[in-house]
Image 1 (cartoon, rainbow, N blue to C red):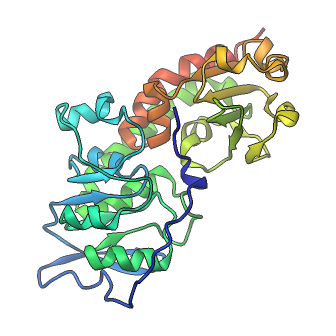
Image 2 (tube, one colour; image 1 turned 90 degrees about the vertical axis):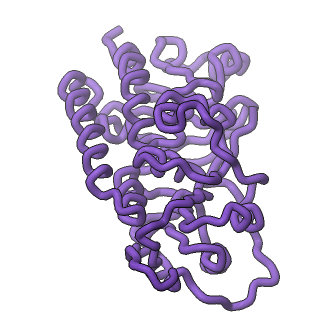
Length: 309
């Protein structure tokens, strides 16, 4: 099953855009100022209708108890994830049509605020979104689609006036991470290679700081030096302390003789998570509730993979 890779997704080419007003114009009521890489967005304090067009922004909005009126579609199973149904009660969240930013569908949702933090937004795209509603994007402190989860949560919470809720969630996640680090000192310094989406024979290695490996970084694991696409001829780069395959089954992976010969595979130091797995969804969305779920699911597998042979 195909899953788009945010870092590799092409930016939408916006045509016919005239210079326009910015999201600084948020009406006559009280507003909340959110700074970002293109300036400051003034979000109405009473914003209720939230649209998320970043790949994972809905996970952060939901964690703060707000159900978006429309959101970016990524994983088909999203509405069924347990941390999602706790907020939605199992109701489906409306999704925006198309793989790219759908300006018409966003406008039709009549948002009070748009979140596009986990997306590569250029100035032209930002301006067009801002024509529709005040738009919150990432700061210039990080590369596109590399904002740490806690920073993304605080940014989202600031725009929605939910700072106290965000700090409570960050504290809950950090406490669980600290507990895990204390219980598993063997994790420290071991290299975990995260191989993202190899079901069709391609291999994409996730690097340190990428939100999709936030848990590995937080637990003290090191990342491999190589980031990006890796050919079949260089699968030796996967042969480190632990290999985490995200998006394929063991059976699929072992069809490659080169992969099957890797020491990390033969010695049982490889963990597999399919696209349909809730764990894969949790690591990909990486909101605070998703991270809590992922810690419960992932830590036992990592402990087994790092156990003495």
